Structure formats: structure tokens, C-alpha cells
Length: 142
Length: 142
DNA sequence: TATTGTTATACTCTATAACTATA
DNA sequence: TATAGTTATAGAGTATAACAATA
Image (cartoon, rainbow over all chains, first blue to last red; front, side):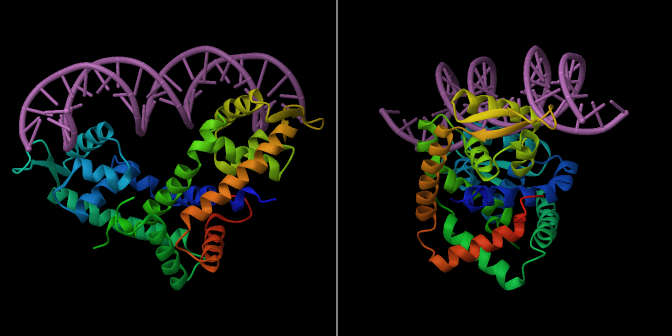
């Protein structure tokens, strides 16, 4: 009979928690939650992305998205710019301050990776990344 | 500059979601949430485990634990048995019905694994499992 | 005095429904 | 008619504080 450590759902969830634990102090000091950090990363990847599109990347409901972007805008990290070709939609952009924050956050993310993957070598980490990309689909879609 | 798909927190979280999506219909039909399934697996692994110990495996607060076990007990899946050597603590056990449920759930978990890992071969899945066990600590502790 | 578990309550996060404005 | 986004509200899920029983 399998045990709980044979459940990949459990293992993925635990691994995710480990990373989040590492990042928690930094994020708290900046008034961010992991979801908001991910949003800033997604906006940095694709400047001008709409709220709907950003929501697809991380499966965030549009009403939740409004609240999260409100928060990031309130912190001066993100701007909403109306799309001239479809004035219902906003394009999302990082402010200068937001870009600096993203760079800083990436340093902490890489530090967190190092801590959590301390018992794996570089090749193993890269293999892990490839497997995960295959699983979640590296196209960015579901 | 890295992109969001370089964030292992994001990747782990997405991968976990993929598994949960697969299991969602089954769990809903049985009145369970993923956390409760994990609890049943943990109790199956270590019959007599206390609520506190079970909470450590999955980082569940003791007040949350009371509610989750209440639910599983209400479904007739789990029994609380007072520990004779420490009468503050309960030992948790699966009922016969709970054991059957666990067996059945494992079949669905393995089906979910197959679906999510369809683009990986058996060796890659096993490597992935080993990496995850190293990361989360296969001792079952944090 | 510290610990296991319970209860009542409050909080956080997210989603539902109804709305505005564009398409 | 359908879609992007907003607002107000309701709902999950979880945690905090105070408690009882036991160590």
C-alpha cells in the first residue's frame, strides 16, 4: 500500500511551501503575498499583459485580480494603461519602482532555491526544472 | 532576467494544482477536500497517530485539525481512540470504511499521476519523486 | 507550568452576482 | 449579445484566544 509520501500532490504542495517559507520574511516586509510577487513576475515577462491574461497564467479570478492589481498599484509597483484598441481592457506595466522590486525579489527567489535545493546538484535542479516545465506546460497555457 | 517559469515556487504550485484538478471530481463526490484525503493517507501510514503529529506532517493547525477530524469522523472514515498513556491525546485510526476509501482514493491518485505525467517516462517520474523526497525530507519531518 | 484538544470568534482569501463600459 | 473590468457581498478555509482536562 502506498504512503502519503507517494502522493505527488502532497510532495508538490510541500515543496511549494518550503519555497514560500524561505520567502515569507522578505515578502512580508514588502507588503506582498506570493501571488502578488508572481503577478509582478508575469507583468515583467509580458509588459502590457491584460488582467484577464495575467489571471490565466496563475488561475486568478478576475475579481480577485482587480483586488490584487489595486494593491500593487497602491504600492506604486504597477500601472494600468488603457488599451487603445480595446478600451475595455487594461494593459499592465511595472513602474520603475516595480522593476527594481522585481530584480530584488528575483535575488531572494534564487537564494530560496539554493536553500531548498541544497542537497541537489546543479544538474539535478535543471532536470527537475525540465520535468516541471513539461508537467505544467512551458507555453504558459493550461 | 528570469521569468515566472523560472520560479520553482510557481512551478511546484502549478504542478500541485494539476494533480488536484484531476482529483477534484472524485473528492467532491466523496465530500472530501485534498487536505482530508492527505490526513486519511497519513493515518493509514501511521495508525494511532495523534492529531498533533498528523498536523506536523501537513502543517495543519490544531484547531483546524479538530475540524477536519470531526468531518472525517462524521463521514465514518476515522475513529478517535483515547491514548491510555496520555489521556490528553487521541490516537487516530481508519475505520473499515475508511480503509476501503483509502484504497479507492489511491487508485484515483495513481490515475491522476499517469495523466499529469503522461509526457514523462517511468524513469523520469521516479527521478522526480526522488528529488522531491530529498527536498521535502523523506523523514516526514520539516 | 506546559501540553492536547475543543469551542467560539475573527480574519484572510477568494468567488458570486449585479453592474458599467466597451466590443 | 458577449467581454473586460469593477463593486458589494457572501462564502470557504484558517487562525486567535480562552477554556477544560491531563501531564
